[in-house]
Length: 320
Image 1 (cartoon, rainbow, N blue to C red):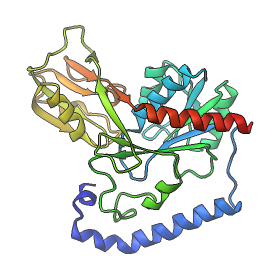
Image 2: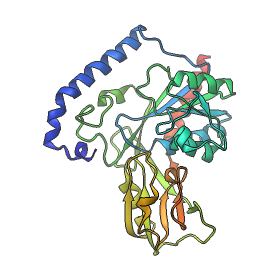
Image 3: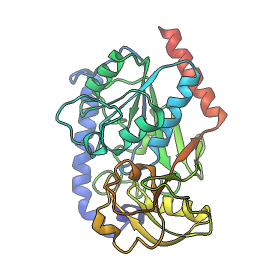
Image 4: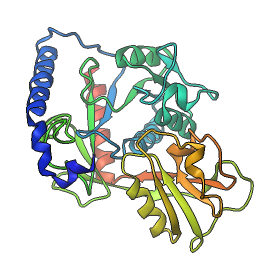
């Protein structure tokens, strides 16, 4: 909701609902802390990659980076996710090569295709974590779930959009916050997507890869070419800016809601130039354009962040 980031005056009409949200979420946290509501302790370490705000902040690239980094450290990681946007008859759902975004959600399918690691989707993260551990994962990465206190965690990482940050600093529905900024004091690290960074934050940059075909065997467009662009992510302008910085001339830009697939009717009028999209759009691509390409991105994180993770993992192992 763009109004959250413009601090629109009419949002004050939602202040009573925001106050109610604060009371309910605070009570829920308290019940888990007191043990009135039970939380699940997985048999292996759990790393949560979450955020304070609704909408995309760049968690998925962090999850992919973590999977690859943990493998280099000798771990066998797996990923659990709520699977937002998916609809399966059976949970927990273990992804395979034939699992679609309609079943599991776009982000879990993207993570599975990029990493090949075990991915389990389910609305109850405790059940997903239990299933993942049974599959042999020795460390679990939770894609989102910072506020899902029914699952205990060992490491908490928060991803912040460097430009939008926390909007008007108000809780839902008056603002974009799921929890207040006080929550940042209790997490292990705050990852800033794109900067500028506040003190203590770790800067993450996203490096574009080579264009990959969605449904064509031709040659990809090159910088300087006129193209159309579409993005169904939390903040489409970020993707459009990336393409412009790569040198592409954007003729038409189609911004979709996060997790939403494009409808063939929306592609009318875009056939006269190559169509560039995000990797998340590609995994739920319905067809309808004969010259589609997606741009993968890779997260880059500083050595200081790696050192922090290594120290935290050593502490966990020492505790065993």
